[in-house]
Image (cartoon, rainbow, N blue to C red):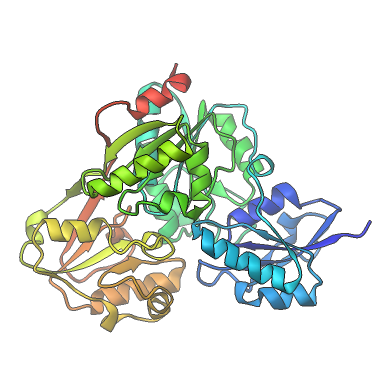
Amino acid sequence: MVKKNVVIMGAAGRDFHNFNLCFKDNQAYHVVAFTATQIPNIEGRRYPPELAGDLYAEGIPIMPESDLEYIIRKEKVSEVVFSYSDVSHEYVMHTASRVSRAGADFRLPGTTNTMLQSSKPVVAVCAVRTGAGKSQTTRRVAGLLADAGKKVVVIRHPMPYGNLVNQRVQRFASIEDLQQQDCTIEEMEEYEPHINRGSVVYAGVDYEAILARATDEAEIILWDGGNNDTPFITPDILITVTDPHRPGHEIRYYPGETNLRMADAIVINKIDTAEQAGIAEVRANISTYNPDAMIIEAASPLQVDNPSAIRGKAALAVEDGPTLTHGNMEYGAAVIAARKFGASNLVDPRPYLTGSLQKIFAQYPNIGALLPAIGYGTRQIKDLEATINRTECDVVVIGTPIDLRRVVTIRHPTVRVSYDLQEIGQPTLRDILQPVIS
């Protein structure tokens, strides 16, 4: 049998999962490389042999996506598997055209072959875009299930940016666990809020092993999605979050539209701050693409620990990093809070950027006069700290999901913005969760 040479395009997460489920130990294929994008400094590594299996004694190289055509020609690749999320449909097809021109087939794996089966009930929270409000929705769902007396264990979409062997199965039950396992800011932003509410979080690389571990201590598995990716585990209930600040994105981004079409319930979030026209467009698209879904309207009201410190001050807004980068949002909770509580102006951090943050702004030139809290490693965290402290401002408004002051030392006065999901009217999340609660 002649094996097909394969490239898996990814961003250190979904790509590894698709390999584990579809290609590991599969004699019909030979994966010659992963390509990497979106996340800084993840190429140049190898998917290690300890995880890749007996067919890959030396592991699998992870190469820059810019080398895609070269890899296809050099390795005589016959199939390229697209395995990352939160990209426009147009981007996906431009990529398909690159692959086709280079002579290979282009493949989008379906949900049937990329979802694990659980012996425990699974509630999944996903989104149509990064920054739609998935995190606060997941926290709300976890709280409702816990209030009903259920033992909830969260399985989070992967973010394995360090030692992949060590990160095969990760369990987080305390802040000390985050520190001991050298979590990035991006990881802490997702894990810490669950831990603070008493939930155990699993993440890592090998989701079959992760699911087995989580099942041992859970009554209900709560899948906490990343970007706008589909779940890794077949859900009994799928809740998808939409964002009327970006109306139309729910049907223009991959695989967010898949989540929209699969959802049992769709949350229209941020209705307190979005334009009515945007809310109406999202609702119309739901009616067209998933008319059977339950629609839940919600807000994410802001809480600010010291709003008087903002009024009349020059404010540096520090926001969740991925929401501003591949999420394409031009503002977040910090900007909204700064404007709401009377900041005199938003300070542009671009004259003060340090090190790797200069590359981030070059890659995403539409970020504007605010600062994404990018911290995919120690160097980036130091660059973030230096940029904040170099910026001439009166106050730093922190809109990140974690308290950034625990990670970096800030010389300016600071204000922390937080937010939780609040359902508006009927139906509610409790209604969609009733089958697993009862």
